[in-house]
Image (cartoon, rainbow, N blue to C red; front, top):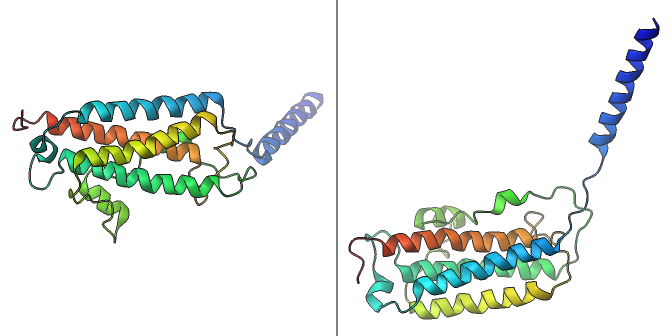
Length: 207
C-alpha cells in the first residue's frame, strides 16, 4: 500500500510539471548581436556576389536567354530589384509600428532561409497571382537594375549596423518578423545567383 501511494504521488507530481510546461508562455524573442552579424554578413556577401557576377557584362551577355521561356541575366536582376523593393516596403512598415513583444505565435527562422517562392517565372506568377508584377519586363539596362538593388541594399546594411530595435518583435502582418524578412532578402538573392550562374554556364552564352 505504501509503495502504491508513493507511485501515485510521483505520477501526480509529473502531471503537475507537464501541465505547468504546457501552460508556460513562450519567451519573448530577442534580436541579438549574433543576429545582427548574421544578417550583415549575408546581406554584404550576396551584395558582393551579385556585383562580381554582373561586372563588365556586354549587352549580349545581359540579354542572353537559355531558351525563349527563360529569363536573361538582365531580367533576373530586375526581378531581384522588384522583390527587394517589396520586402523593404514590408520592413519599413513593420519597424514604424509599435513592437508586439507579447505575440506568442512567432515563426521559426528555418521557414525563411530560402527566400520567397519565386525562383522562376512560373513560381513568381504563382506567388503573385492574379497579378504579374514580379515578372521582369527587361526594359531597363542591366547595370541600372544593379544600381537599384545596391541603393536599397546599402541602406539596409547601414540601418542594421546601428539600429537598437528588437527586430524580432516587429512583425509583418503577424507573420515573419523583420529579422526573418531580411533572411528572405538574402535567401532570395542566393537562389537567383544560382540561376544567373546557370545562364552564364550555358554552352551558347556569349563570350
